[in-house]
Length: 445
Image (cartoon, rainbow, N blue to C red; front, side, top):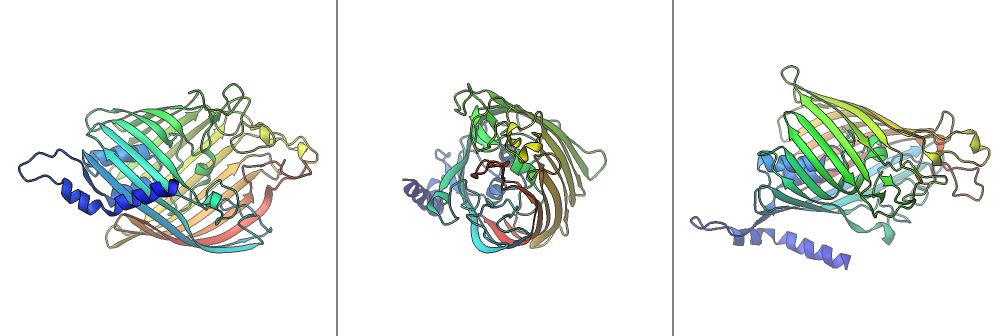
């Protein structure tokens, strides 16, 4: 059934040109139908996976700029292909998280690949200036939670990654409301790298069923998100009567940020967020999407500076309010390590080498980490350093090269053990280091 739906959408996508011409009104007749077409720049902004992650804000800005006209249905397509090489100092332990690093897919101390990383199909429906809907289909075998290798059918599925409806027109009134499956407004989880997500996103980038009420005016952007309870799609969990069943709207997030220009050609943004229920509340042994006994909230502070529209600097820190119970393993010898809070630090910079020409080049560097245990514990931390070279073509396509180093191997699932016959063993390692490079292209239409 899923395959039939995808084929139908693709067929509809291929016939856009003829449909658009049929819907075009005559010179003197008012338009009674809807225009169906493409806007490559809007699609690029909505589907790129790591740099502009406040997609609700991106959509509202597209409406303000006229990229999405009223009474229109806009399709988009994006595909990422990569080739990479990685070397680890410990067999089967690769910390790079742009694919789920398990021994099902990465054997030995050297791995390499040339693969389709992901593909997306998006639809933006603008009913009028006040009502807009967005949906996005995603195919991502390398980052799917399905079992098996990247060629196993359970990992080769198509999902509706995001889908939400927005009521609002920030060009006329600063308040807006959105309901659906979307990113949670928490912190600064974007990356300056051309392809690789930051550890901040991996740790605190939430995706959930929710409703968002927002305000955007005078440089002030505020969001309150009411989030469905239970274990959500990413980084969100609030128990409902001791279960992970999402039967109540009992979780929330709040974010406030302010943008201003202290001097000419310099724009500064500062902000902070709070999330009531993170995923770091489960008891030992830790298994994805299992219930928690109590919520474990988190807070974050962040900021960024843009200078002359060429140099962008950003940084942020996030931490849970309480310790993650599952980071304490009661079995010796691992029981010497106490339960720990979860935190992430992220800072980076990107410099635009040229601002005109057929290809816009930029150079970026970023450090981010994930801390989940006390000093000396196997699950103490995972650091990531990325140096990237990016070439942007027609504001729709990226050609990139990245050099990546990770320090530590700390998968969230079974982070402190529990998946071996001996409960005093964990697959996490603070001694595993990985170095590699990635070349690839992201093409959007």
